Amino acid sequence: MPASAIAAAFAFTAALALASALALAACDSPRPLARFERVRDLACSCKDLPCAEDAERKLAGAIEHDRTQYESTPGQVPVIHATRRCLTTAWRAAQSPALFLAESEADQPARGPGPCPNFLEVAHRIMTCDRTPLSARTRVAEQVLSLRAFWDADGKPLKAELELYDECLWRLSSTLGVENCR
Image (cartoon, rainbow, N blue to C red):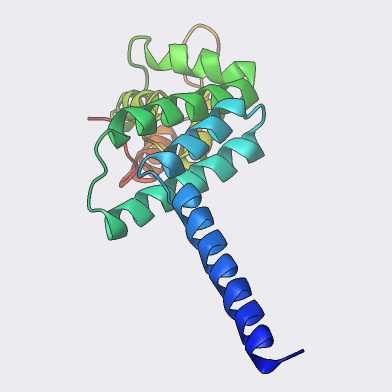
């Protein structure tokens, strides 16, 4: 085969490869919201807590990527809110029914020494806030459930007031820095 024919075939192949690459790049060029929409779709399809936690990590990554690439993508806020609502739904479905009793307990009149009603109020905001990380919600829910064991059904404390004060203060201090939708 003559050298000119080989060169022509090589040039044609290179041009075809370049055209294919450009066509694929044009098709795959991400819309600014595509990353958020994929995470939203994943979060809304989650049926268990590990899936929701994975979607939450991907949402954090998408937000960080967007912050470094675009500064702000128009229209991202509604998609992020929808994603967080789906994450909350998956998280609530994975929780014990006792959690919902604990949430309603937080709405009851205050009991116990000072930090206890304060903790229950903050805990309720944390557990019902879509912006709170799932792991923090779970930790606070477990603390509320364990704290409920310190009162009997009629509201009488089962521990000395000073011990309850310490328990509630410890739990309240562990909520510092957690997003609480204020």
